[in-house]
Length: 230
Image (tube, rainbow, N blue to C red; front, side, top):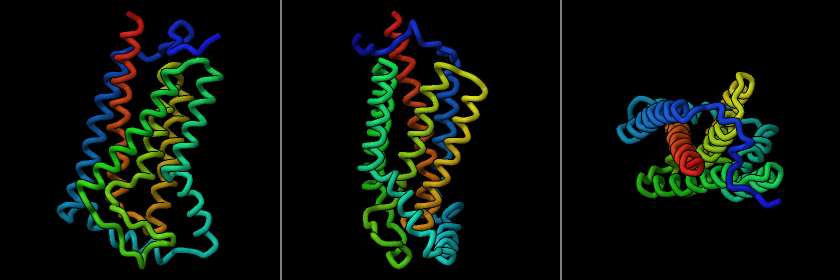
């Protein structure tokens, strides 16, 4: 038996196209609002930017030698190389066990897309990272806005949750999706702030971008499914 692109006959499309589009629009609006607040704060030195230095200083003052290596290990999981390998492995496992290609492709594509978006925005905005005296080694010297690590984990959590829950919806699965996204995002965002690699505005912008990318994934997914059915 070969892998199918998508198994409509065996997939419960629990969420109608209308519901998915509504969720995509809401996600887009929320994402744009969060991102613009972070961007304006960073660019105009207002709102969230007021808390950038105080939060960084607070994080540095409470660092513990016993905790820092653990935080470094955690944040490295969301690095480009490691996380890409992890997502690729998950997608391959998913494709083989579920015998389908579309959802694994969307998952891989969303992570690749967020990496490109992060790189482009960093190079355009050119916002400097915190000074090296605040950073835990190894130092990171590229631009800071947005946080690529945080964006990757937000996109992964939101997209994989959508791809599962939209097909087989239940209150339990939706709750697990919600909790998992919050926990994973909080852990990685905290690690980036704790290690002195990013500002609050950086990780906030990444959360907004994550919702924007989720909305794009939903639109692409529903267009493909409707085309495939026809």
